[in-house]
Amino acid sequence: ILNVEQSPQSLHVQEGDSTNFTCSFPSSNFYALHWYRWETAKSPEALFVMTLNGDEKKKGRISATLNTKEGYSYLYIKGSQPEDSATYLCASPRGGYNKLIFGAGTRLAVHP
Amino acid sequence: DGGITQSPKYLFRKEGQNVTLSCEQNLNHDAMYWYRQDPGQGLRLIYYSQIVNDFQKGDIAEGYSVSREKKESFPLTVTSAQKNPTAFYLCASKKGEVLQEQFFGPGTRLTVL
Image (cartoon, rainbow over all chains, first blue to last red; front, side, top):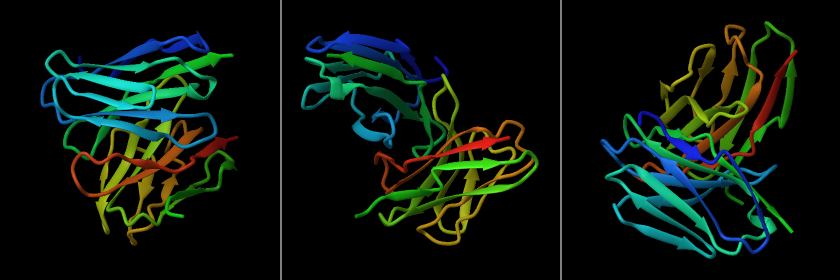
């Protein structure tokens, strides 16, 4: 994998459903993996910065796991709520830790 | 409140005109970034600056220019040489330490008529 890729591109779930999506990134020269949430009409906000293989981070109903050897991270949302509707971006530094390469994002819509 | 401001929110310009997008932060962050977003694509890095009076090209710098005369400010000029300037532009900043997250402004939507 040469770039950061996210799947699926979009996702529609019902309120209360749990969901997950994937970020794939180059596993060579790994520095870190960032997750951001971008709500409509707002600025992207950082969710997690992950660095260690096997790491798991949690913020409320949202959690993320990291596999640096195979180059993927999963983001999980337990019991989705309409306020979780957003685009979820992942990014990984490349060419130095200051340059983030972003995936195209997963657009999540949670329907009441 | 500390944060990043971008102005204006919407900007319309005629083809062939240069236009400057403003980005200001009062977070005392060392590094600042400009990204461009197009539909269906991830954020693409235009320019970034790690310290005052220094900046580096990102992946899509052609047709853009920046300056970093003050720590708080990182304006982006979209020149007439940029072939497809209509896009959403995001500014971000972060502390100088490794592995810090970036903080984003609200963005400017530029439409070239």
